[in-house]
Picture 1: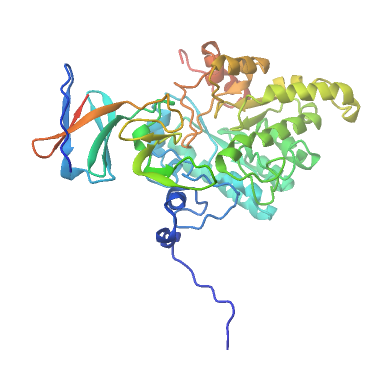
Picture 2: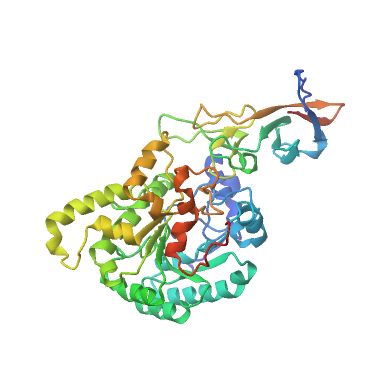
Length: 128
Length: 357
């Protein structure tokens, strides 16, 4: 579990969403923060937050499976990667990297991400 | 003694997971399994969705459509839907069975189950009654048995079929539907079993490749229903094609019109151009609406089939390729008709619009 240092922004709100111990690696939590539906993920001990709104078509992005996928390959091989680092949108299945919000199939698309910090020795804080 | 054939078994296919490459392990964990979780991926149709074909934000159940409360919250109330025409889930797969009598027995059971268990749940529900197209007599009997129920609004079959639906083999079914004043609907599905040829050149390989090509069944039914004179025989019949896409229809109709003009003598029972029959009798549901980069390209195509008056809105809830009515790209000026009026013309048993709605 690594504490992340918050980059201070001029105007933002902070929400303590849970304790580190409440969300194990590979798990997620869907929360309403100031009217925004947000998915908080624990990916291998790091916490990430994404808006639960798919930039493709408005689907429930954060409520799809947390998984990996096959990398692009040259020779009809299946090379599995991004293990437990992707979320597939809960509607149409487009793949997004949880840490960055990057959409694998359309690099022009990006899911909205939020900074997450761990503070006071165990509070998981989402900054929106 | 040597017994050369003894069948051991797993109790669930999950026992295979530790032995699978992670890429394909995901298929077995989350992918479509026609027999449900823990079953083997039998190809009742040869293409299984590698992630399962349900939205995953609804319930943890393998069949989210079994949960009425979630449907009410996430669909009916959420989008303020006046009527939802239920099309069920697996039952149209009866068309893939070789035994027509068993298929018709399943259809009858489904139809009674719908009236008994789903209809009372919500005033907004209207039902599709299912028939087994490989059993024309049984299907016609079933339509005459239950087709006058006021909350049944259409006769439903799968788009996958043994032969194109204009074939006289099926006419007893369409005759019974016309008699009851019910539209015929063909919904994507039934691509396997005895319906061995849903793709023109033979079987494709991957799910996404195939899903995009299953519009071929819709094309074949359009041509066949028109050419065999179904709409001359039953001038009040509507044929609704569900979930087969829409943008292919103009091109097919242009081709049909051109070929008919030269070879009308093959089908002397026709009195109008194929596109004219289509305009009056064929309706397509919008989902999954094609999504070109430039929506004007789609809208131009839809103008060619008078989409404003011939398209019926559908979400496909709770499936993975759900269309959200707030996101769907149809011309704003057409929305009232596509979201409501066009369906009321096809489904005449729907009650009229309430004031202000």
